[in-house]
Image (cartoon, rainbow, N blue to C red; front, side):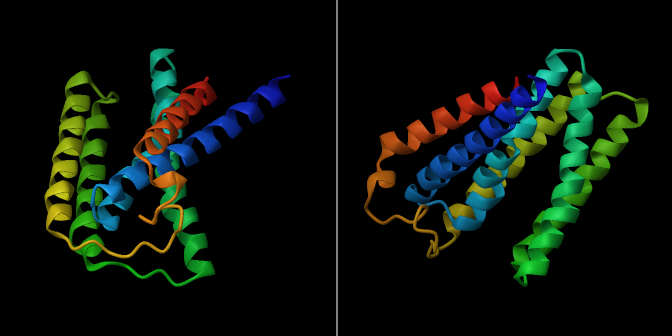
Length: 187
């Protein structure tokens, strides 16, 4: 029974994240937000939503080790394994903005989290600083995305081509159903 519950939760997390990413990406692109900004925010948030759901549940249940280990482990896995396997399958073209801006931000904020954790806890104030940094980063990306020219999107599910997925109610429904599946899957 435990294995079935685990597999059902895992399936809900995977499919919920997929629906959330598809809906939010379509919505963002239909609003004219640049694909790089969509990738750095909407897709990144959507694919991290299962970790968020599990970490929040762990923190609320008093299992803070699970919450922190989930975040650190997920980031290590994403950078080393996912990026490594992707590069083995096809060469990855890196945008200059990633090298000049995003990598230093990621390294700097990782160092900040390490410094915050030196007292063996991440306090409410630390969380507020991290959330403030996230909001500042999103604002920075929004400002940069407004100035960027829209690019062609090769994925037909994410393109602005007319079709059932191009309708606002469908995009919003994908987002809501995806979020609901994530919350349920995290339990």
